[in-house]
Length: 175
Image (tube, rainbow, N blue to C red; front, side, top):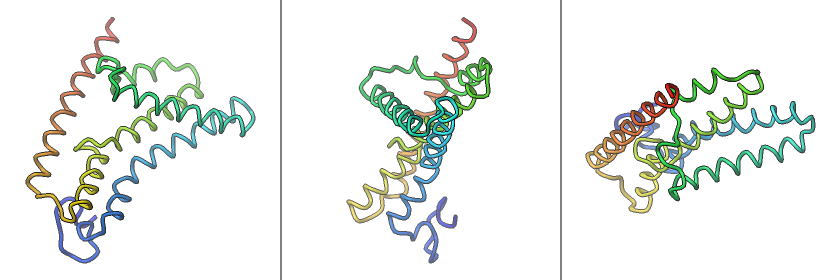
């Protein structure tokens, strides 16, 4: 989209959009992941339970469990050693024994990706949303250089965490 990567003064560009529209556009990806996970889980629960009402209740419990997991991360009840990255996820997927198990893991991964992407951390969409909220409060955009430095610091932290998690995943597989 014009103005999404680099600021553009052209009418209709992302840069010229109002902040609520920018937030909606940025949040869309993570929200679609979450919505997909919820719908997939409802379908799975309906197939397994056989009753859509109970399936929706089960889906609500699934969402609450995800929320509790997020709270555990921020309260220090989950450490970086407890995290699992693509290597660990592929190992879990390889151990699935049915299509239902596979689809359940797909729902978990989709929900996790959506929620993670919306966390208020600079290189993620949630970080960008936080920046837009700050800009709305300040009534002016952050300096582009400051925003780039903030994004770079967050990116380095995210890559460092990813490498650490990858090493842990390989260690779990070897052991």
